[in-house]
Length: 206
Image (cartoon, rainbow, N blue to C red):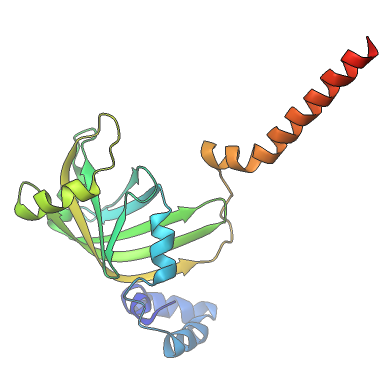
């Protein structure tokens, strides 16, 4: 855990709870020995490039948190530099809850999950929205994923403030169809081989 994540997430009340439950000294040692943790390294960038979805939390004008799922082809969330992420915001159900929230408060929290390997990356950042301007015109061609029927309405930039890797505890492994097909490919080939052997044996026994 980097120092910057602690500075943002470990508020006085959080630290009070840590002291109450006996973990404050441990996290202080992590802070004292930690790296800044405000710029994505090679490991984080590779992890993001492999993801086909993420969860994004924002806060409304009424103070309520709101979480939205974003999905697309692997790598649709792009790393433009170690402190800047970007994605094309596609037209959906036209509720625009996240968009309105971000006009009110640009802060977001992202959860990126790798269910098969029980790994998650948390990112805190501030959003910059570009719609119908020169920056959008520049970036949209780079960010569009080519999904059938997808309409990219704007560019969402996320300026990374901090990140943290979570432990794998309590993450239930889940697999996409593509991941299952890859994992089961040796089994499929073995079954094909056995079926061919059975066919040949039946032919000889006639």
